[in-house]
Amino acid sequence: RTDGGPYMYVWYEYFYFTRPPSRDRLPVCSDCSQIFAMGGCMSSEHDVGGIDDVGEGRQRVGFQDERGRRQLRNSKGSSAMFSLMRVRSHVVRSVVDPGTGKKQWAAARASTYDHVHETVLSNFVQVDVDRRQAGVVGLTNLGNTCYMNSSLQCLMNTIPLVDYFLGYDYKSEINKENFLGSGGDLVTAYASLVKEMWLGEKKAVEPIAFKSKLESFAPQFYGNNQQDSQELLSCLLDGVHEDLNRVKKKPYIEDKDCDGSNDEGDAVLAWQNYLQRDRSIIVDLFQGQLRNEIRCSECNHTSVKFDSFMYLSLPVSDSCRSLDDCLDLFCAAEVLAGDNQWYCSECKRHVDATKKFDLWTVPPILVVHLKRFRFTRSGRKKKIDRQVNFPLEGWDLSKSTKSNHGAEKESYDLYAVSNHSGGDLGFGHYTAMALNRFDDCWYDFNDSSCRKVNVSQSDLGNSSKCYLLFYNKVDSDESTAGGMSTRTTRETTVRRQDIDRPELWPHMQKVPLAAPTAASSPAHMQIQKQNYRSFARSTRSLAKDLAAPTVSSTCIR
Image (cartoon, rainbow, N blue to C red; front, side, top):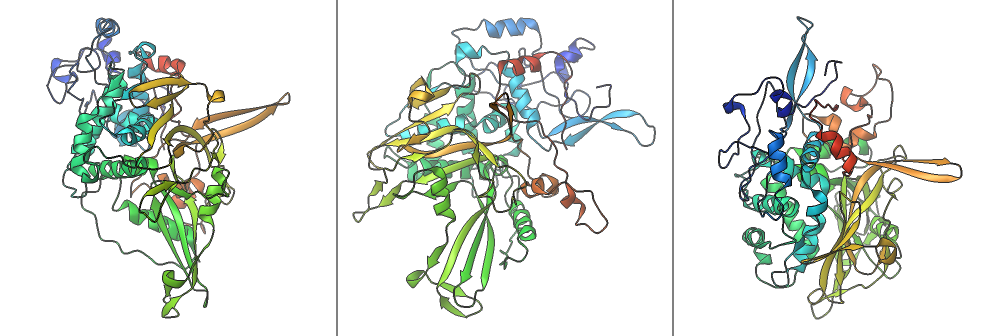
């Protein structure tokens, strides 16, 4: 940009019109070393590694020529699967040299994944998404694997996670030394499945290779026994996190026992300690924070801890009619008595106490697990077949998030559901429903079968089958004109969590707008909230704009 804009991305196409690069500067497949002729290697087995620079920083790559575009568009019926161009965590921006006063390009770490999202969108423009019905792909049942298919379909429609595996050089973040992971085997198999479902031509995919790697990592899923979709989801996200954990050596950190007198500071310190051991795309997307308080019933001594969570497991009772009822029940005080007494460090003995959970920070992607199964005397898991009403749009968590203080609306929209039919875990059936990113329509996924759903004629939003609910956080604005109320939303940008970037931590986004003063708290506590570019769902018009062979730009903090 010539207007001094803070950020820019450059297409290789742009340079083809001005100064064609030499062969050794063309993008090359990291697996087969072939030069990309149309934005991706046509091998179904290969993935694009790090696409390095033209000039400085990391650049995203367009299609090399119009012939390549036509070839891809005319490849109907082909089973070949192409790879999208990938970017890394660095982007380039315009800076002014303090010595010369001249502008120059410098590489910097991106604070969000916006450049990944835009790269994927711009590459999807070259694909006939209507013909391919991108993302509307079934999963073959390998023998009682409906539980796995249901969870996978929900994750396959978690757009920021999909874009990470389609447009980011995830291989550069694989932690092969982490004994808690699979050495990269699980995440590599999962990434291949994402690629096959979003870039392939098949109407249904057999996840055989993925399940094999899953069984190696988590032997409890070996064989063809019916399992729990929530347990599969938890295990998969844990495994992917450990495979992509950017922390190579985890330090030992002792939990701090707080007394509730400095919750704001204690919560930030707990998050900082957490990030010293765990940092990955899974943390960036799914991790929130709970406030856990236990209070002695005799001396009133209080112990407070701030725990990270990847999903909310909410209880379901006969009195629960809505999702908010389940959340209220989760946040209600619980009495610890009898065999559950708590050891009070002040009283020096086990005493009756009250225990209470509160939401402290909520993540960009919120997964809600409804605890519908309870153990019977025979040891079987029996389903609580209670109909629960849950919002499709605008689920407001402001009042339930204790750290919010009413300063910001915490609003969530539903985009996927894992459903369970039947009265018993071992003999039921799992399906999924999800919102497609391109046509904004809901689809029902029943193993290899996919069909469009008319929301008004379905039980979506009020069901006894809903088991896992997937919500994405949105920034919404409501206005009234002519007696009509309108709601405009944009999905909250996913910020890359890092130890030395506290301004990106979720706690910092809640700091009230205020002018810094000499007597105020440290600089990073004075963060002014900015409007970030969103991970808004793709639309054809936005995708077409991104396809133009021009220099584009976006701001980051």
